[in-house]
Amino acid sequence: MTLRTQINNNSLKNITMNTRSKITVLAMVALSFAFSGKVTAQVMKEKTVMVGGAPMYPSKNIIENAVNSKDHKTLVAAVKAAGLVETLEGKGPFTVLAPTDAAFAKLPKGTVENLVKPENKAMLTSILTYHVLPGRYNAKEIWAAVKAGNGKSMMKTVQGEDLTFWTKGKDLYIKDAKGNNAKVTIADVNQSNGVIHVIDTVLMP
Image (cartoon, rainbow, N blue to C red; front, side, top):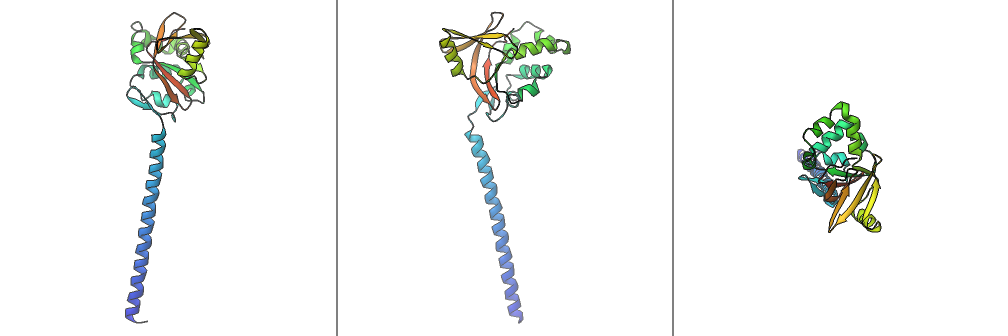
């Protein structure tokens, strides 16, 4: 083999290796873009609702979404104090009537601080589970139940007592056992394990 032939063969090998390397890199880049595009497409497909300045993703559970809402810090803290995080991360489904921080602020001064104390855990749990319905009920279904009930519909909570749903104009309301009324301010915030309806008043059993 002449020197020229050897040089030509080596050059050919280098060109082939470089070409293969470039093809490998291009393939990896293409796969990366394809995967990234798929993830982006999946996120874009989700119909989110803004609550407390954050998007609520239907693919996430109740707790995963609630912790991102700046309007529900008190509720999240109360759920943690009552030891209900694991329950609301569970399969469900649940319909959660979620009072805002402003709703908790309407309670008598010191109420929340007392409720989150360890010795009041049973009472706190009773109040929180009074805000949860077993099953997934969207606003349309509740409105239909109210209409079928000639203006009101009673639904049993996880706590065991009933809530009364009623409507006025285009608004949906909930009456608790004490006669207090809460208005649904944001309806149909879908979760992977249920649905949340944001309310403006804390309900009391």
